[in-house]
Amino acid sequence: MRKKRESDQTHFFETFLETTTDRIKDRIEDREDDLKDYLDEDSLFLIRSFVIKDAYHAAEQFIQYLKEKYKRELNYSKENIFPLKWMTKDKEIATFINNHSVFLPIINYIHNRNRRASTPDFADMVEQADKLTGGRRYFDKYIYSDFYTDKAFYDKMTQKIKVSKNLIQTYLAAFAKLGIYKIRYDSGNRGRLYADGYFTEYDNKRTKHSFIKDGNYIKQQLRILPEHIKTYARQDKES
Image (cartoon, rainbow, N blue to C red; front, side, top):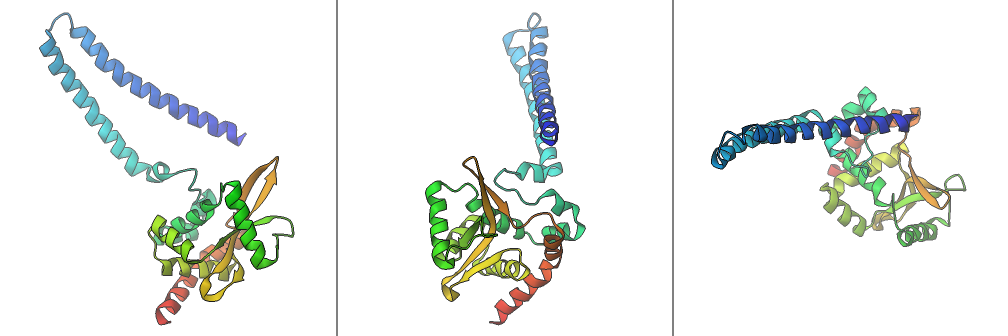
């Protein structure tokens, strides 16, 4: 039912935009047709230029309106799934997100980095994790979604999201402390193996499930996350 409603809404907006665009084009063409019998080509060109510039200016104003009114919608991508609706409905979590601009880039990058991993990349992830953990599974059944925080990981992530290594480490430490992510193996200065979720498979289709999901426990942890971030950031400065 929900998918049907979303499909209907998408169809409505697509139809609205097509209709609006067609009206603008029809207005230009109809205006030109009305005047063809009375004006020469040079005069028609001047009028056509005026109408097109007027339409172009109106389009620019509409685009600016969309940028200001629907900034989040314009920046949305299927690759970037956070924030989820339940996050924005919770006043404390929504405030945290607004005040901590690096939170969403960090969790989106980590969630998406192996979300659609190729079979070889996925196999490499599992092989590396199994060597470190002895093949442990989530609930003894599901493959963890793992990432190992070595130099290569941080080099790639800092370049992609433009967030410093120290700040990423601060968030990861806070996530682990609160159980938002799990530390599966600790190699000290060489890096840690974290899990941010797990995978299920059905009909040869692999689906990733994040540990950051709607539930009382995760909501409570996200509400107190700001204090833990401050604590780890302070510890980093003092070390």
